[in-house]
Length: 200
Image (cartoon, rainbow, N blue to C red; front, side):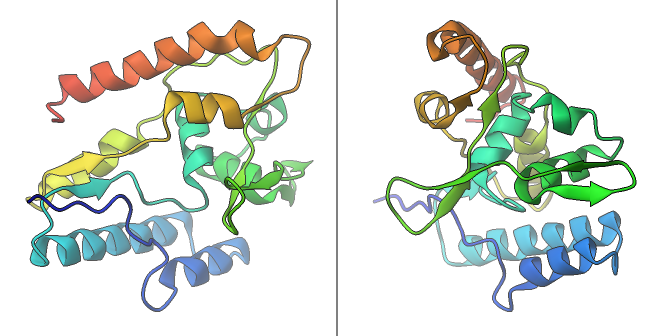
């Protein structure tokens, strides 16, 4: 019998991720320090699973905020008001999750909604008429490579195409159906890139 973990809790045993994010928002630590904390958490969690003898260890289950938002960001589903912020890509992602008020702009966070009637809330992606749904991010492959450097072959996970499509909010005049092919092609590119780097 083979064993697998669908997704490992990312916050840390001592809530390290929560506290690091709060410090970052208060400008008490740098972006590099935040990402280093995240990297250490991923390493710890992968090694725990490896030492426990898990056969299929998951990657891309880590998130600063929400896996649905991660997938939307990976596929360029980023409303223009966030793209226009003169901040780093990392801060654009965080602005979508919690808003941004500062010298580079003022935007509210995207809406949150209950994940299939559970107490977990996900960030609702917004698709505008001008949204070009395509693979633009690298998080999935970067974290896969990170684990591989530790000698751990992982099984990356991603929000499925149908799930993401149904959870999106379409804010313009175009209908959801107008974007179906774009979603499919973007996911084809995800799978092709996985194959190209040797992900099983």
